[in-house]
Amino acid sequence: MKMETVVKGSDPFEERTCSAPQPPPLPGPATTYSKRPVVGGSSSSFRGYRCVPAATTDLWERLFDEGYKADVCVHTENGGTIYGHANVLGMASPVLRQMLKQARKHGHQRSISIVGVPSEAVRVFIRFLYSSCYAKEEMDEFGLHLLVLSHVYAIPQLKRECERQIEHGLITTENVVDIFQLALLCDAPRLSFICHRRISNNFKSVSATDGWTAMKQSHPVLEKILLEFIADEDNRRKKRVRNRNESQVYLQLCEAMEALVHICKDGCRTIGPHDKDFKVNQNPCNFAACKGLESLVRHFSSCKLRVPGGCIHCKRMWQLLELHSRLCADSDVCRVPLCRTFKERSRKQSKKEEIKWTILVEKLLRTKCFSGRPFFSRAITVNS
Image (cartoon, rainbow, N blue to C red; front, side, top):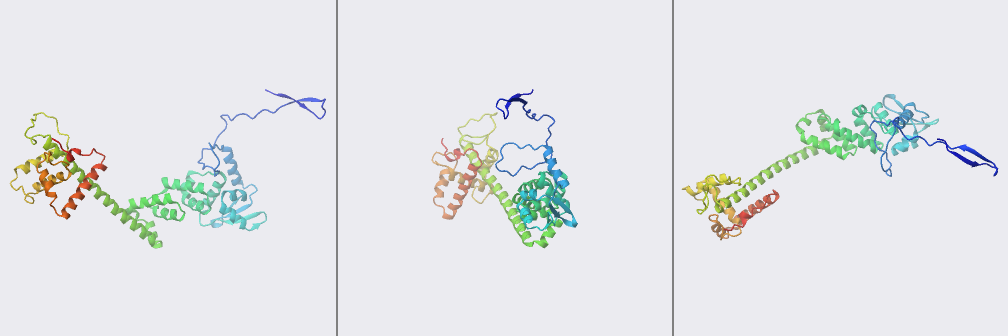
């Protein structure tokens, strides 16, 4: 639909009619966008979503491929040459900008050199500076070289992408030592940590690789640091296992204290207070340690060597009774045998013996508290 507008000419009495231009059409289904991996731009002020049409990235790649009005000649390994544009390279990398300022001019062109990596890796690197795109197979083949280039020439977007791709698919047992050294040189802390953890968890297989042998010859200090860390990690692992086993023992002691109070106060199966009337088909006991402790109590009541040191089972029972007395808050009304006797006896013990029992009680209570289970108040405050 055309819109007609009256426009005044130079003569105030003369008026002419013209047609206003139509607005551009909205993007339709024909508009396509690039499906290749694209790393976000460097503008910190950008907010929202960034949609880059495929035509735009194709335009930048054509500019690189065809070298239209290129004014930079990049020399690579084995006599390779790549053409580029000083404005693009200088804006993408401050290091390249400085190199271009110092480069010699040959007519309208400047020459710089990027050596030490394959020529094809340099081409992938410069292509990324134009379009922020790369192919998956290129990253798989040149990921480590691109990590070095992105670090040396200060391209943080490419460096992050290289770290991510290497972390999720390029680390193997054979190359983990090489990648670890490279990550240290390129200041990639996350990647170095991942490699460090892989080496520590698979030390036996990693230490048999050629990469470890090469590191041992070229960087003996780094090998020493790794060996010391692995030894410390092994000691820490053993300590964690020891602490876990110790905590399990303390939890079993907590359960034994609860079961002991339960047997002596409420009665269980065939052992308990004489005034309890037990049914034949009574419900099973909820205390896990009750069955074993009940057998120990029966043995203790009938053993003829019931003296400390005379019988190993009786000795254990004596220790449980004394531990209970240390936890019991009111021995006068407690129904656990010898609770009051052990309480009075503890006041006459040596300082060394008292310290030993105090430490045991503190660890017992701390373990029970950290386990997240209800505090065993029945073993501390027992009423009739």
